[in-house]
Length: 276
Image 1: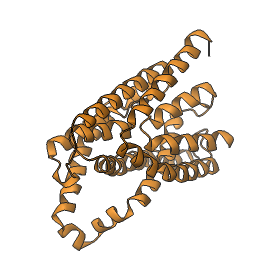
Image 2 (image 1 turned 180 degrees about the vertical axis):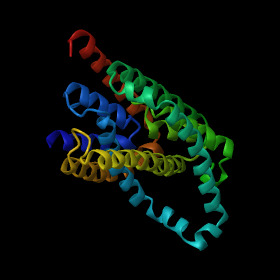
Image 3 (image 1 turned 120 degrees about the vertical axis):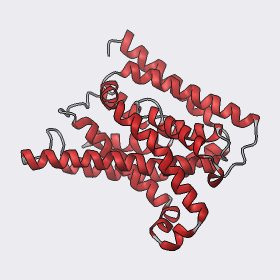
Image 4 (image 1 turned 135 degrees about the horizontal axis):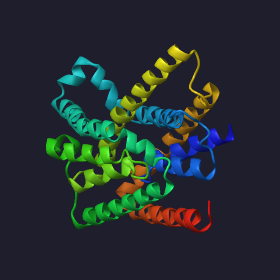
């Protein structure tokens, strides 16, 4: 249960901060030998943790989301534009995610590959921060072009790889495309609702089919652990959301880049030279 709570905290802290939650979970599971779940259930457990942070972001952006369930909300041309931007951006994400699913699962078992992706994320954060300082971003989300939305969706698709931050990649893409800091974060998390929600739904269907055929959950999946993990990641995730928006506005993404570089060096050193 302690491992479950710790992984929930890691997920909640790192999902919204641009440091890759899946990468941190993978590294944590490697060094603590928490990978006792077999038959692909590790990925199912990780998705449950992502579901917890999904609930947090839905609550945080509740006022943005509710109007889409009303007729008057859809009559607003700006809201319709944002909805179409999210849909268009989600298409390349889905294509890349499905195409790389097997490779992503394999990468989660390779801590060196995860650390290399950490370094890649750090470079992206440094580049986006430098570009943002060179020009004053003024584009609002409804003003974003569909081409730039597709580019952001591609960035999110690439971030399916553990170690490449989803929020970091999409926020960086938004900043490079000229979005204001808060607008880039807003678009990133609206995209997350679709991508993580869709992945969770598909994984839930797979688990349902397994339970229906076998009469029990996949080996290693304990209902109480799933609930505790999801609740922990939800609470911690909500608390970290406002902090991220503050960091983006202060143009301090480089702090996370240096953190990722340090974590990568430490982990690679432990694996290669300490035999861990």
